[in-house]
Image 1 (tube, rainbow, N blue to C red):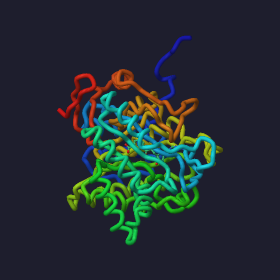
Image 2: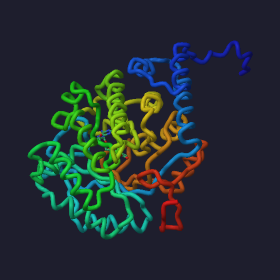
Image 3: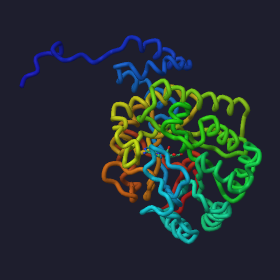
Image 4: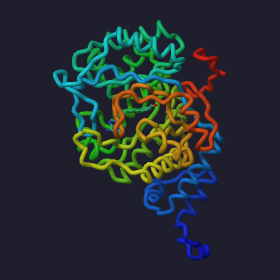
Amino acid sequence: MQLKSAQNAIPLVQDDKLDVIAQKVRSGERLSAEEGEYLYETPDLWTLCGLAQEVRTILHGNKTYYNINRHINYTNICALSCQFCDFHRKKEQEGAYEHSLDDIRRETEVAINAGATELHIVGGLHPWLPFSYYTEMLQTIREMAPIIHIKAFTAVEVVHLARISKRGRDGRDGITEVLKELKAHGLGSLPGGGAEVFDDRVHDDAFKGKIRGEQWLDVHRCAHEVGLNSNATMLYGHIETNAERIDHMMQIREEQDRVLQDQTKGTFQTFIPLPFIPGKSELAHLPGPGGVENLRTIAIARLMLDNIPHIKAFWIMQTLHMAQHMLECGANDIDGTVVWYDITKVDTADTHQECTVHDLCRAIRDAGFEPVERDTIYREVERDGHAWRVK
Ligand code: V47
């Protein structure tokens, strides 16, 4: 086969309507919701991803962050039965489990020996575990590993804990009290899970029973007020519209504006778009987002969330190959070594989903970036084997 000339080649799609958006991005002007929605429609994916990459490069240069962490899912027993969730079980169901404090001790020991800087702990809303289980879990880890950062409990778990600890008399005060108590026992920050899509319509269809967007934001506001940093997620690619995704990002951006204006002690550090993985959930008939959708969403997140420093491509859910491409479309973090992860399993994966530091760094370098180990609050880490300290 002979290629005759470039004139015969199919031209790259170039969308002139992106010129105004590009100008705004380059002059540091904020994009509107309408512009965000347009970014979901433009056929010019390359310009969109290139713009997101310009922003990422200004903020982080060539660095891509990863961490050495362990995820602990302490129970999959959950009072809720959300349609999208393939993780929850009822107590009598096959595969239901709850970790004892001895299990937590063993997992902490393994994490210490692996030189982990972070434990990421989330679970179902267990109907019977007492509040003391959670404080003892934190205390146990804190005593065994004083320098490991404990990032634990999504907003809906915090609401559940306020309820079972009977500190939930007045919603907000109860939440604040519980967060202070968890912090006193070793909690270091809140993960971004459970935000799903804030819109009430989507919520009532796919996440019924879970706290609504307004309450999720309020729990994070309480966490920021007591000095805990947190992350924010968006679970996309199921029944939501593009406008609802953009509205979700706008609400996070507005909340972060308030946080920065009030000089609250904690802030949102990272935004993590999570692609819906159908698995064996009740929404398994939906296909979940494809690769282009994933790239587009991470790029749009980078462009819309101009006040959130980090955008994470969570490799467990995106796959490591997809995460590599995302590093060229606005993402500057790929999460960590993880090891055991029970909430979602892509294709044939099981709970053991480990990526060694060697493989993470190789993937980052392959994509053309410089791997940088960080701790949970993005301080760079230097290490000598399993011993580590902040630079
Ligand atoms: O809250 C549940 C989501 C979240 C599915 O803060 C699903 O650094 C896709 O929040 N398909 C947990 N997603 C994961 C999470 C997270 C992960 C990595 C880092 C951080 C961070 C946070 O996973 C849940 C829910 O929103 N989820 N089921 C599913 N079928």
